Image 1 (tube, helix red, strand yellow):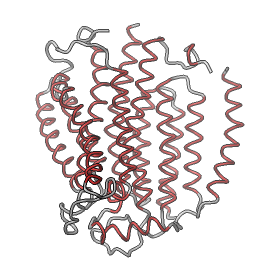
Image 2 (cartoon, chains in turn red, orange, purple):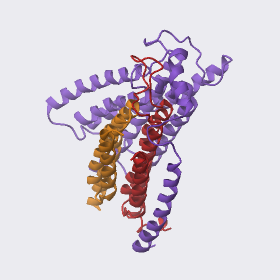
Image 3 (cartoon, chains in turn green, blue, cyan):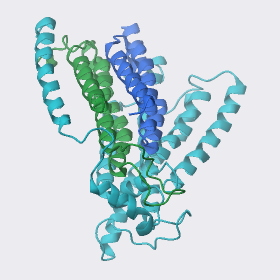
Image 4 (cartoon, chains in turn yellow, cyan, blue):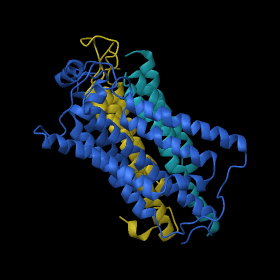
Length: 114
Length: 81
Length: 248
């Protein structure tokens, strides 16, 4: 039970990989990449959590009180906002590929055969 | 682990599975918003208000405003060709 | 590769991946028993050293400011690449309103809501080191205020507000200002991105020193990048709907 958040991160990542591998639609692939990124956020925050601790904001609590780790939160929050720009770039690839080849199916596009 | 965290974790797992298994992209966009909300709740329960705030604004504002016009562009192209 | 063999191959490698990841995470301390010294050190030092209440914002913009500079540049690069991909040569003038909202009540409420959201965004950015918030979150809320103009008025109004000559210098200028403040620290004889202003009194908006300058520049850069992204995609959708307005 105490490893459930790590299991959640692994589950989200593997499910998103399954979505990418068996997908027939380029936009669906872009969304699944975004879901795979969210697995890393869950893992980072789960590593930094501490039982019966509170958020690391010291406006009204003394400095020596029990808080969770602020460093992993800092890493995660910039990542969340930047993933929008990266996801938009992936969608731009999908839109442009659809315009060039007329199909959103990765198996039908000759250049993507791999 | 308190029960609230277990519920949030289960909701996030269900949301991720639903997003991946939906094949229609319009439905997937709606399910992605639900998944963002479940993740925001999970981040709040994990005592991370800054991360929850950024996930909330991204899942509500930024990502749908990029995803839905892309889908609209593709659907209108496909309807015409 | 056909579907069935590909799915079977993925299934086999997924089992291996799950085993590997499970073995890796089993070596972590169990959930809730965070033991690392680095997080505790920063949590204890952010108030006495930098006079900043929000330890996460102090980490993002001061202690680990170099990582945030890298993320900022990723965002600017991705927005520039998307604009380069999606920007065809188009007519720059629109003939009449495009995709206008017909109800005047919605337009008026939208204008009020856009102003209120703008002020809320400035508040979220400014109070980033006292409460949860900061440049990144407030920047996206700022872009939402601009997007409300599109949603409740018509596309021409959005296009006028977000002309390329206004928005792209803001986006690039914000990232440039971030790096510029780091170089200013170098010019003053300190380390790159080190705090060079006095730290002020705890709990007021002037605390944190040069952290607030870096906070604001990243907020403006994030807002600019998001508005550029929305503009590209909405222009795609609008020219798809009204093909005479754009050229292919």
